[in-house]
Amino acid sequence: MNQLKDLLSWILQQKYKIALISFLTTVFLFVLFPYGDLSDLVTSLVAKNTNNQVYVKFENASVSLVPAGVQLEKPLIETAAFPALEADFLTFSPNLKSVIFKKPGGSLMAQNFWGGNVEGSLSPGPTSEAGNELSKISFEGRSISLEKIVDFFNSPVRLQGRADLLTSGSVQLAFLEQPDLDLDFKVSGFNFLTSQINHAQFGNVILPEFKLSSATLKGRLSGGQLLISQAVLGSAQEEMFGQIKGKLALNIVNQRGRIVPEIGEYNVDVDLTLKRQLHDKLSLFLLLASGYKTDTPAGARYRFKISGVGPAGIPSFSKLQ
Image 1 (cartoon, rainbow, N blue to C red):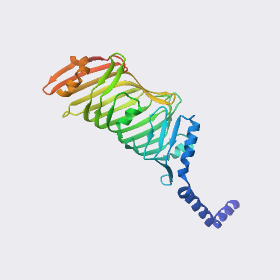
Image 2: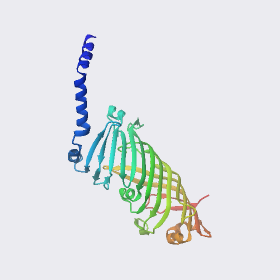
Image 3: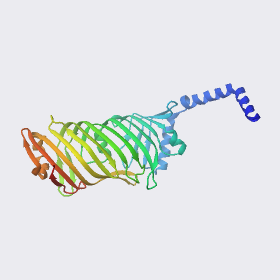
Image 4: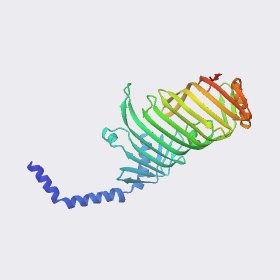
């Protein structure tokens, strides 16, 4: 007890020195420390620890107390697997629970990432039945370039527009298990550009261009299945108005550090109305569904079920009740 009293007494006697040291330390860490010089060091350390597979660069860095976090200016991340990831500012705040248990976690904000802004959070989750550690994740992206998203997945289909994405759920960070996520996806100014795809059954196929005011999708990705509760293309006043529901097998696979979606069996209900001009442009691609066509004064309406296995196979059509 006497030792505690002596310690408290000494602290009180040295309070001004302690306050001065704390103040000077804070000034050094948050004002004088040359965070801008950290970029080369971080670049070197990341390259060394990833066998030169990942390149990280930023122009400047700063640290904030409230909330505790680090902000990077003009960050750039390049890998052999994906196109470059860059933004104007990237702010990361660690999660206290993650720090204590030494697990990945925190919140992230990025400005002008692929033309829009994103916010996300990651925190430790439960352990799965298979014994893998899961993480809770939430992500919100606003006005993201759809073209950048498509390029990221190396898709042969060329799309343009501004995408809003909201998702939350649980994920195994190494994708040893399939994620469990709610999805809410909306694209404004949807532009399907002329694209060429190489189909296993039909050879090279040229897909014509068309434009819509919007496209939306709501659903859930769980157990390797994408459950589409509602997808809408365009509106009744436009050249195309489509309503889609159904499910498809969608596995997210980790191929040596590269995350790749694999599409399997699908079964989808389609209700598609087309104005005459767009219908004539797409008529060649609608031949397989011609038995489920009804002529309308302005064009045509198709109502059918489509099923198959993978994008390379020949789909089957049946009547939509």
